[in-house]
Length: 85
Image: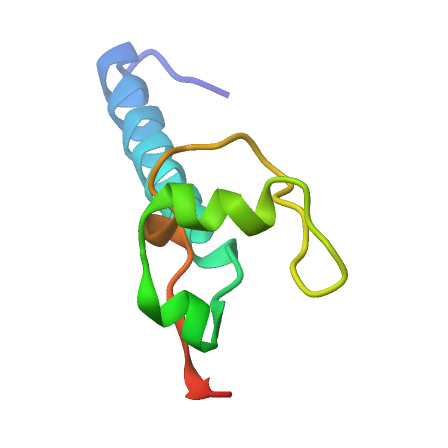
């Protein structure tokens, strides 16, 4: 319960700091949630979005369908897996 000594400005600072920490954590979690591209020859040859969309726009038995909108830079979120296949 606020007292007469509590300042609305102090409360705003606390809320802003908590909000900033929350935003930073959400950005970090967002970029870590994307699955890595398997380390196959097709993924190593090209990192451009049209090459990715050629296989992943509709999907087939070997490549899954892209479950989100085309953001234009696939490698920004989807890194290359370390183990070569």
